[in-house]
Image 1 (cartoon, rainbow, N blue to C red):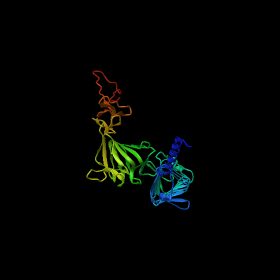
Image 2: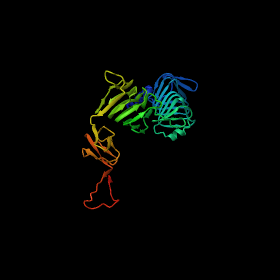
Image 3: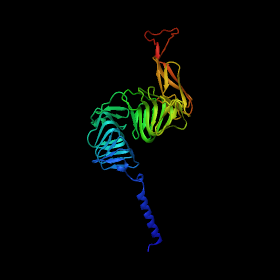
Image 4: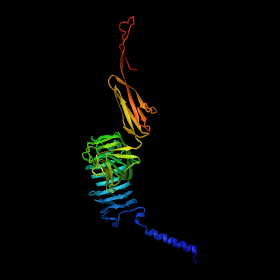
Length: 427
């Protein structure tokens, strides 16, 4: 005869087994193609004909093809080939792995990629952090673009031995399939997980933070949607503006397009995109201002899950082509000089702790002598930088002549012939 405690344990075990059998598929450890999930099974192939979103790793023991719809998964592992067709779209946050080839007739974005070959016939294949090709050389045709991680070197692009007339894009640089750099700046692509430094542009892929400091770029090359494209789906992105930033030659494309959950604006600076369709757009997410940050020259227009952007005003919802930010704790920097040259600071507004760089340019027959600063607690370093205090700063650039006239008075004596000195150089 079973004891009462034994009966209770048996009943609990039966209940747990029943609950496990009834768990929804969303709680499963992995998922795969099925007819109930919008897939159709062909001869050694699964075809996706309806949008599919998975919160768990997607695994298939046969090739898959995404036809004009969207497949989203944290990771994808396929025994066989992976193909998009008819504008199909695959978004894989982490590793996309296939024993066969990855072929693109649409768009594929992967955190990392491992496969036996790449064929980009039409559309884009974007790899954000790392890639490993174990078979044939990539093929990128004239209507295709392969986007590689921002830290990929030109030597690594050349070593791919890719073929075709398409493009390979690494950060701000565009190559042909042979690894030759194509002149003319095209779209700058920034991906979560990879970093990029390009003049006044700094992208931290780990924190998804873009800093523009007096960044200027002419986008005379081929563009896709925008001058700067940030791909950080599902993540929080920060945009820091310092100084005056200018994006030109956009031909009605947007200045910055960011695919992210949220984009937070901060800093004291401006973004100017005079011939664009709009300075800033967030696709599928919202725009917010950091604490203490003020937006000037525009209004936030949030339309998540659609596109959010900076509008001209609350009355005029047209995308603004320029706007400015100012932090409440920012202070002004004024640089003056009387004669003998010109002087500038790289920032007109700065926050306490910011590094400000000064430049002095003497005129002919003058040299730079020193900086005079108010307040005098500010120290100018040897490299002409200083740390911004919690107050306004006024700086005076002092220049001196390179030579001075000298007049000798004999005072009753004589000056030996040939020993007259009429001028001295400064210093």
